[in-house]
Amino acid sequence: MRCKKCTSLNILKSGDIRRLSWEELAVGYSFDFSVIFAAWPQLLYGCWLTLVISAKAMAMGFAIGLICVVVRRTGVGPLVWLVKAFIEIIRNTPFPVQAFFIYLGLPTIGIRLSPDTAAVIALGLNGGAYAAEIIRGGVESVQRGQIEAGRALGLNGFQVFRYIILRPALRVSFPALASQFILLMLTSSVVASISATELASIGQQLESTTFRSFEVYLTLTALYLGMSATLTAIFATTERVFFSYPTR
Amino acid sequence: MVQTLGFNQILILLEAFRWTLALAAIAFVCGAVGGLGIALIRTSVFGVLRRAAATFIIVFQGTPLLMQLFVIYYGLPLLNVTVNAWIAVAIGLTLHASAYLGEIWRSTIMAMPKGQEEAAKALGLKYWDRTVYIVLPQALRMALPSTVGFLVQLIKGTSLAAIIGFTELTRAGQIVSNATYQPLIVFSLVGALYFALCWPLSHFSFNLEKRFANAR
Image 1 (tube, rainbow over the protein chains, first blue to last red):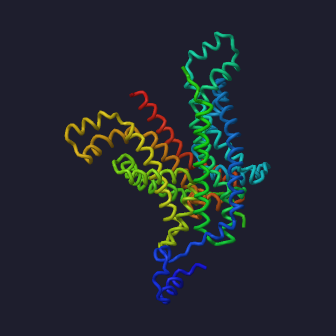
Image 2: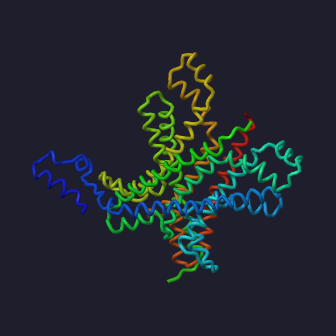
Image 3: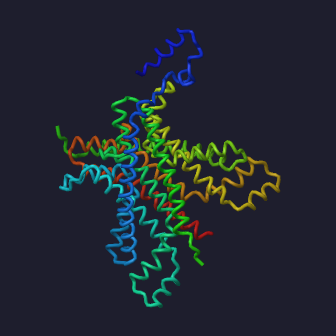
C-alpha cells in the first residue's frame, strides 16, 4: 500500500542507491498501473458507452437545435421568446446544475427518469441550445438572393429551407458542430455524478476497488484525450469528403 | 430531520456563492497570466517551446475539466504537497483557463496585420517594446468578446468543484436539497444565481462582438 516513508527508508537501508527509480526519488510513491491494465476491457467498454451516450445526446441536440432555428424563423412572437429563453437559460447555467435539476428535481413533479435516460436528456438539451446558435449562424450566412432565386423558381417554403438554406448552412456550421460534439463528449464525464454508466463512472468503480486514484484518473484523462483526438481526425476527414464541393 | 426551505437555506446558498465568485476570480486572474505566457510562447521563435505550449493546449482542451481536476487533486499529494480540495480546484481551473485564454489570445495575435509588426521593427523597436506597445494592446482588444465569453465558461466550470467535494454554490445546492427534500426549487434557485451572474456577461460579450464587427 501507499506508505511513502517506509519505501524510501527501506531502500536507503539496503544501501543500494541504484535501486531507487526516478519515480521513487522524486515523489516517494511507486506507480502501479497493473490494476488498470487488468481492467482494460471494462475501460474500453466505458469508452464505447461514453461515445454512445454522446452520439444519442448529439442527435437529440441537433434535432432540438434545428427545431429552435425553424421556430425562430417562423417569427411567431411567444414561440420565439420561448426558444430564446431556453437557449439563454441553458447557455448561462452550469451543466451539473442542469443534470441535477433533471435527475433529482423532476421526480418531485412526477417525472422519473433512469440515470442513463436523464443523462442523455440533460446532455441533449445542453447540446441543443448550443447547436441552435451554431445552426442559426450558418442559416444567416445564406444570402438573401439565393432564397429569392429559390422562390422565383417556384419552390415552396419547405423546399427553400431544405435545399437552399439547410445544405449550405450545414456546410458552414459543420466545423463548429463537430467541436460542439467533442465538447459534449467531454462534458459527459459529469453524468457519472447522477450515477449514469459511462467511462468516468466505470473509472470511479475501479478507483473504489483498487484505491489507485491517481493512476485511474490519469488513465481516464488519456482515454478521453484519445477519443477527442480520434473524433477530431474523423470529423476533419468527413468535412473533406462531404463538404469540399466547390461553391462557385 | 427534514428542514423547510427558508431564509437560512437561502443564506447557505448565498454564502457558498461567494466561493464560486472567488474561485472564478482567482482562476481568471491567474489563468490570464498563464494564458498570456502561453500565447506569447505560441507566437515566439522558439520551436521547442512552441510545440510544448501547443501540446499543453491540446491536452487541456482535449480532456474533460473534471478529469483534470481529479488528476490534480490526487496527483499533488504524490509530490508531497498537501492540498485541500479548494487549492486543487483553484490550480486546476487556472491551468484550464491558461490553455483556453492562451489559445484565444494566440489567434488574435496571429490575426494582427503583418504591417503593424513590420512597421514597429522598421522603427527599431525591440521584441518587448513591440509586444507591449504594439501587438498586445490591439490583440487583447480584439480578443475581448471571446475573453468575456470564456469567463462565462469558467464560472460554469467552477461548478465541477462540487464533484471533487469543495462546497461552492452547486455543492451547497446538493446539501440544501438533501436536507429539505426540495431539489426542484433548490436547483432552480442555484441555476438562477448562476444565471444572474453569467447572463449579463454573455450579453456584454455579445454586444462587444457586435460593436467590433461594425467598427471593422
